[in-house]
Amino acid sequence: MALDIDLSGRVAVVTGGTRGVGAGVVRALLAAGAEVVACARRPPERPVTAADGRTAAYEPVDVRDPDAVAACFDRVRARHGRLDILVNNAGGTPYRLLDDSSPRQAARVVELNLVAPLTASLAARAVMARQPGGGSIIMIGSVSGTRPSPGSAAYGAAKAGLENLARTMAVEWAPHIRVNTLVVGMVRTELSHLHYGDEAGVAAVGRTVPLGRLATPDEIGGLCAFLAGDRCAYVSGASLAVHGGGERPAFLEAAGQPALPEAAGQPPGAPDPSPFPSSAAGTAATADPEGSDDR
Image 1 (cartoon, rainbow, N blue to C red):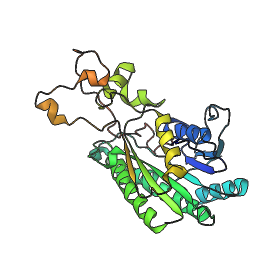
Image 2 (cartoon, rainbow, N blue to C red):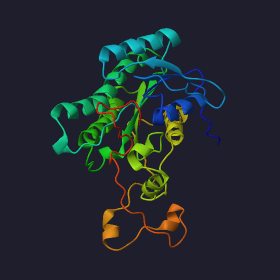
Image 3 (cartoon, rainbow, N blue to C red):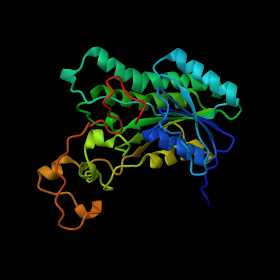
């Protein structure tokens, strides 16, 4: 049985869709045939385009501004006549220990990563609920919401809340609107060097993942297209872990059991990866103290 994904005739909005994971999501939805609008505070350095040359539209919006979000979705509905897919991707956090954080800084992180997706989802529902076919909302969550998140506590708490929010939306807005979450691990984007250093640093971090590498934005995008499509018509309230197998338990190294370099694509006898300082924020640390549109 073929599992082709055909989103032709559907309209999608991707928040933070101009770079990083968001751009990967946009490319995947375009490739599946959807009309895509990328929403972000800043325009892309170059248009986000699929392999067939189709290009996403761009809408400037700060997802933390409810009035701006409502106006953005009104423009999408006026231009395209419908809205079938929303991917809540915009998010981020700086690396900051709790002792170095202020309540206002923490609140801004929660606002970007939890309140803003709620705001966008409400605006999307206002359009989707009027359509016979309803719609699909996808949250881009993080492994930071499933485990301790030192250096990004507010971000981890927000992502944990986002996953719960999606499950509740899936119940309240059924049967016309499906809501699901991708719980994403580390992804290699154009900003990876800010968190993991040079190529050796990125490789060292990748070796801590059972599959031996970081994800790519296009892999996350492909899963969004799959969840949005008809093959997942009975999938709602689900959380799909996309983390390459998770994290190797630290107690194994403490007990003297080294990582398996062969499993990570390394030659036998290669040195074990040494701890490499990172943001510990899973998918979305950034140097922007107010958060980022990038994943």
